Image (tube, rainbow, N blue to C red; front, side, top):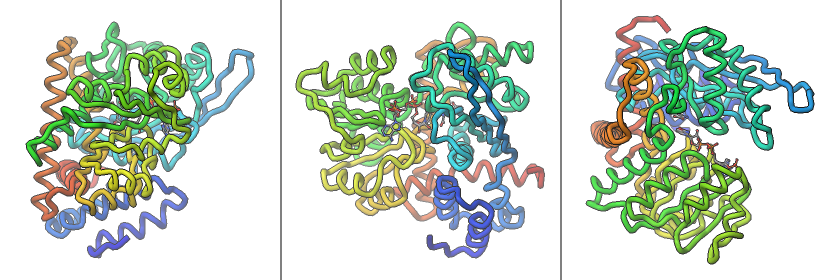
Length: 450
Ligand code: NDP
Ligand code: 2IT
């Protein structure tokens, strides 16, 4: 990586030395440090206050043991994590991921990115992430419940409505949040908004489930309008994944008049030239918890692709990677560009490899990075915290309107930050800079606290 600013270069070297063998964390930090160079050059107070060395070190990282019993009474041990990355602008906030690939590097990359994303929403939330290497696939409902209860029996010591507010992420949805909330309430003896993504009957917000996917489409729509008086209507879209983010991105895309050509899971993808039937996907994924392959067996004219990545070989106008980190590599990026893609927006966290981002940007493709593009989920989590505190709840229309407004203002912030620092259209740098400035200013104001 080429770095020209001596302070950034020094901090980058220090980072590499202190965090060996953490590729995802390094990838996330590399990108941010590179983007921040022009800001560092024009703000000497950031070096004077050691902002970068403080920014790349989590304030607290907890790792704990999660013992649980399966339905046969056999004992299992998993690792639990909570990385409380930065609390400069508000209580720690960020999701919990249950997936076998979870490790310290993945948790830290996600917590680091969350700090900037939360800042971009304009709401008072610091950055955090947590989770476990527990694999929910194939587990019974009771096994999931026992795991969540054991996980919370340790986690509850570190969180609280004004301290740290977890939510969902991969493998953690409404059911898991319910079991986690129940156990927190039992351990602490208090009913507070300590988690978001809760059920509507016990303090959840309308539109939280839909928020990340809807928000993704709102910001893409705003970008298309702003850059070319264009719209999502009539566009051909491919969406990777078929979980929470992908399903509600597809729902909003279809309602805006786009055609969703393909979706995927970790086993493969389905291509439907007539436009994906979301009712069928929802039954397969939300009710049957089956593989996406079933879609091709049920819907005539559709086709199953054996490799999830083959979805990116389908000619389309817009690609929305909504599955997981580094799923969209250089080959997929080249295929998308060769087929005439006009915009790519990240519903997942860091789904594009650095090489893929470079390919999109140098081909002049409008590219919206995760920190901005998928901020709708945490934004509505912030609105859920607000409603829990008020003990009063907004209608779906009210929450949706606030979400749209937040996503549109994020686009304006990142567009303007990129232009202000001489990189118009570079929304990667724009997101990193705009997200950073608020956090850095708060850190300077609060002295050497963290
Ligand atoms: P879910 O667990 O609901 O869904 C994840 C989906 O991604 C599943 O369909 C899964 O398939 C698929 N998947 C996983 N790995 C791959 C792969 N290598 N190739 C293709 N598909 C794959 O998670 P979410 O939808 O909540 O999260 C998706 C992404 O969005 C994550 O990066 C998450 O961090 C990010 N995000 C989530 C937010 C939220 O509010 N939930 C907010 C902002 C970002 P399978 O079932 O086969 O594993
Ligand atoms: O990556 C993310 O922004 C999330 N998983 C949502 C976090 C939240 O607190 O709602």
